[in-house]
Length: 126
Image (cartoon, one colour):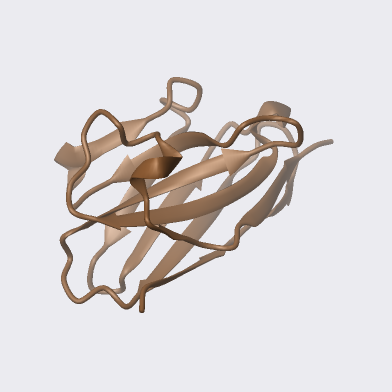
């Protein structure tokens, strides 16, 4: 049974940084993709970043490119989202999602993922 658990959310001032972690359990191999989504009140859930199994298979939403960094530690079954230069518009509930296998152009589609975490709140405010 696959389970995902996010941690690391909180309150941060504009321009600050936060690091989110997604701990995955239940995967029997490393052949799976992990993505971060976020959803702000009144808005649709959007894909933020995804990673398959190496630096060559990483995707970012245009809104976070150059500010966010996704990484993966297969030994620890953990995916980390480092968020820098945070803006109030980054405030949202952030979700970790996963699926078996590699995903290409549809990485930001919710329907592409089978497993979801409960989410962690990120608030950027002064």
